[in-house]
Length: 227
Image (cartoon, rainbow, N blue to C red; front, side, top):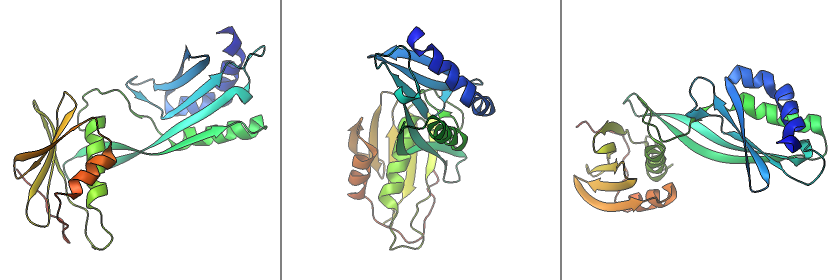
């Protein structure tokens, strides 16, 4: 770690106050010729900043800010209907590189840390928070059902968790009950009126949204499905 020692000290010096405010601690791991730096919550290490720093091993005497690349994944905290549950949905991806001015680069990184709060990272069951997979399904439902032609298009989603897994349900414009069961084994099953119609295995949310549109009938006024 000697090659990275000076830059790690400078990162902590220049960005330490914002780390402290966010309740973050820095962790680094060497892999594939570079140092991958993540920032964990001091309150719960299963939560972490969506920002990472990769420091390349360029072959000089020691790493500098020129060797640093910042990656950030923006997360949105979404209330799931009126169920009292919350989904963390990843949205935009950002990358910043050094362009010749250390101070400007550090200022840019600092602004990301100020704007982006820690989010749940590991697939750990948490009270009132959807798993990452269920959050992806929630985002797929929203993407598939929002239509600008309708003034009140967003459906109201009912969420529950039990021994079978996590279930997201809603009613469409033809009074069909559509529900997704997100199972612990990572399979996700789409049911229509209680009948399984499709199974997804690790598919991306855009694909799930496209398949959902094949079964979904738009509605102008959202209604809540109560089991």
